[in-house]
Image (tube, rainbow, N blue to C red):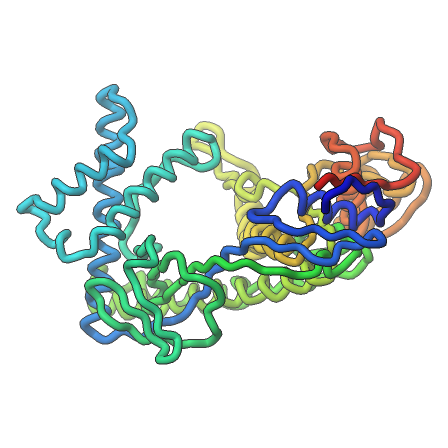
Length: 446
């Protein structure tokens, strides 16, 4: 577009247009006609995950390469900690890579040369990124990796691997051709490959990049979501989603197999077999939860252009109340059960999936402050703890408005999302101090 144009449009369409103009990599075309967005081009990075079928020799190499990357990560982390205790400056990636060369040439660790060098270098980059997140107060201090937990390694450059989709195989350095279960086509240009192990199985994750063009937004409605335990997600339109409770379903069976493992001699063959059974149950629980969340978030993102959720701090909500010997906690058993129920819902993963899926469908996700969402009357704005006398019932003591407490929370979440989006102010409980505009207008400059 070569001219400035002011168009009166629907409020939600305006939100989607602002999102497209402000964010997103490679936004190229935005055509407006009669107040509706017709097309937009953007770059999408997406990962395609497959289960691989390695031979016995390849399985040994997979474990060896993952162990080598874990060794390099832990050794670099130990060096960083010793350097910090000595009062020295932080060691960046480039000088740390020189240490990697020395470790590969060391007579005590000759097996590091058997592993490809690029995944080892990327393990150092992972540590450098972990420190960056720690310094930015976005994550905790980096921790040492443990064998059997998160075993993985990455080939960061497309020049280092080959993909043969027709024959369902991939070529990896020092590994050769490996067959994978080709469950769906790989879309876009492959950028990197991550190999990971979980529950005795190995998987291949191929990250691709491609340009996409689609009509935005596909939906024009807005929804507020209040998450909980009795109801996984309650919508502002009074619909709700029943929780899956995958851990609760298998809790007794898991405890039985854990007791069997505890009676075995540690690291014996029987102990390893019992541990494999326990890991299999954990993997099934995680897979069921992930499948449930993917289906739920896909449905929500496809049907709504604006999704508002609570900005919950799940880590703080699920902290233990055990306390110390000097100051023991109260109702520790009840709080432990609550923590287990909260973590079984997967609220953090629910928000993460909504974040990118809503953006893929041209919508917007807003996280608003959660305080008093279930105590504020959506009719008169009165805030009181007496409005919610029970877990499920809401009854305003001021105007008499009555509804389900979760529905009230979802309505307030949506209202706060509107306020945050329209005025750009910090959302707080109660009414906005700014006057609402009489009509929504949007101005676009090409």
